[in-house]
Image 1 (cartoon, rainbow, N blue to C red):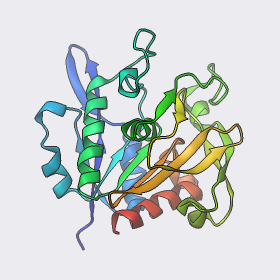
Image 2: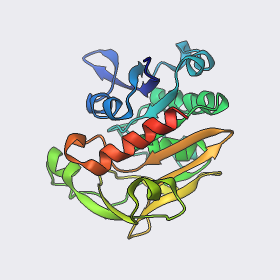
Image 3: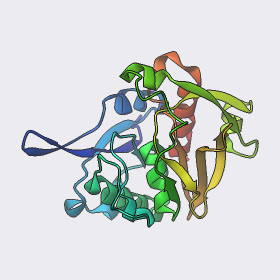
Length: 238
């Protein structure tokens, strides 16, 4: 059986003096096996990609989390106090991927930064410092990703059917989040403080589904995270 092909966006970083394109490995190894897909990395090289051709060959695309923030001019906010690190090449690539896959009526998934990219793509805006909605700033790397809180699932959302309950525990590693939800998107889950944690929709026949938390973190030890990726695998198969 031939597995569906899932495009996974890369980030652009300078290593030494040279630009490099890559993605944290867990976005590959902790997603593809549960979705039952073959991963294909997409570099953040906006100028050399034929996005229409790419969307015709792949079955869906995942916009990953990242240490970088979205350049604020993409959602109409001032750039003079932009909080870095920033990755303008990834921003342009992500927006073009959204255009191409939605035009091709193929699913687009987002995690953390990818969740925020999708919101911006649909005309939404971002809050740029959610001080009370992430792990303590002094926390270590593992502690940050283990920092968790409950979210409330909307009973009309597909995620409610995935879990068959209205609350789940998720981790939280983000300093930015949805301020105004993008056009055509529906809220799938919120935190108790009102912050949107998941959204989605059917746009032009393309399934959009994104979460603010990190289900790719220690997925093998978390049945709820596995269930999300299995659901996304069902979405990519139609």
